[in-house]
Amino acid sequence: MKTTFKSGQWNVICDRCGFKRKSNDVREEWTGLMVCEECWEPRHPQDFIRSIPDDQTVPFTRPDDSSIDDADTYTDIEGTSYPPTYIISPDAVPDGTNDNEI
Image (cartoon, one colour):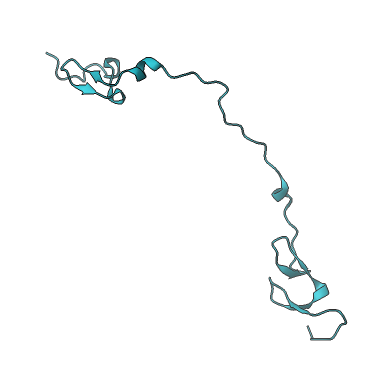
């Protein structure tokens, strides 16, 4: 484009293509760039869709069993004490895996 005089206009460089344009030939895009008519793109309609809020709270809860929390330690047959988180119930051990049986 030639640098010509037009009253009330000035030269502007397009932010996307870099060509020199007059001020009335460029406009601001939704990204904030000043672009010419050939480079201008409308914002995609999908950007304006609002999602449905996803409420992930549970409908009801039950309190924890306080009888387990009351014990500070557990003692096995041999007298070794364990904190409550390390208890393994006998039902949790499959049959045939206990090699200490006589």
